[in-house]
Length: 197
Image 1 (cartoon, rainbow, N blue to C red):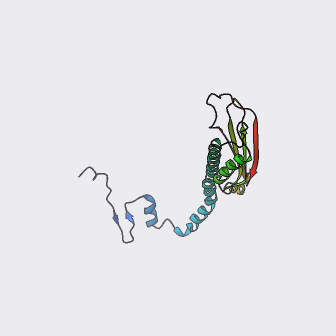
Image 2: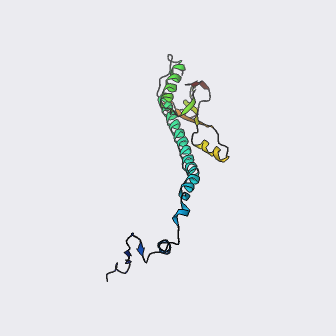
Image 3: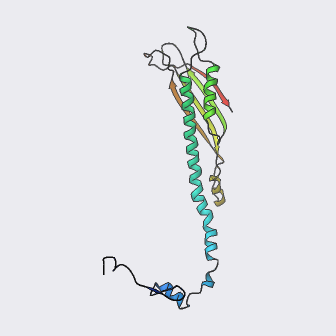
């Protein structure tokens, strides 16, 4: 007998396909001591009772995952708006160059074009920090409301669940066209917004 031969179990089947010498439950069934008619519908009731719990256990983490993903997309939109804004030329003429609503509108348009559609009540604020002899930079803030959908299933079980979550992301980026020796941050803000879509 080979190495695997000792691990294999020999069995034979009767006319109905049941195993002789099998486990105890099969022997009891063959002997007629287990009546399957007494258990009809049990599986259906078990599935009916467990399905809502499975749905909540699966869908609630999915809803939270979507909200984290929306937060990440909002951060990317804000970062791209700040990147575009950091390379814009100032309005006016030398030596009176300054940031204006035209530059803020360009940044705002860039951010709104990248914000996810799942957000409602979107708002963008653009703030330029400028001056002479200081490090000029801009700050872009975007926020919106993410409306939960699947998380509200918790209410079926008596738990409290909010309707929405406010997602807000901010980033700062230095202005590219300035002397490299400027290292003290400018403190005079010029804020534009909040713009809403």
